[in-house]
Image (cartoon, rainbow, N blue to C red):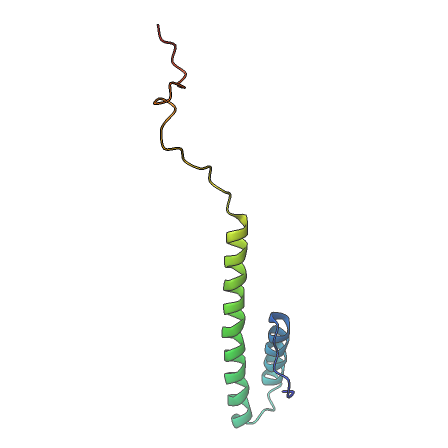
Length: 85
């Protein structure tokens, strides 16, 4: 891995992809494979947290504002649709 740690979701995902390719190559020694696995697992957790945060932001942005509730009902104010006869 380079000296610079991946910061963005896309960088983390690209690093996970590189780790998977290296492990699938089948020529990695056990110690290195263990290190790569740990790194990949950490990055996967970080990506999951970023996705959850993004989902929360999307959910909050798409919530329809609720109309303000009035203290009295329309019936109390004489605004109901019933004809008084």
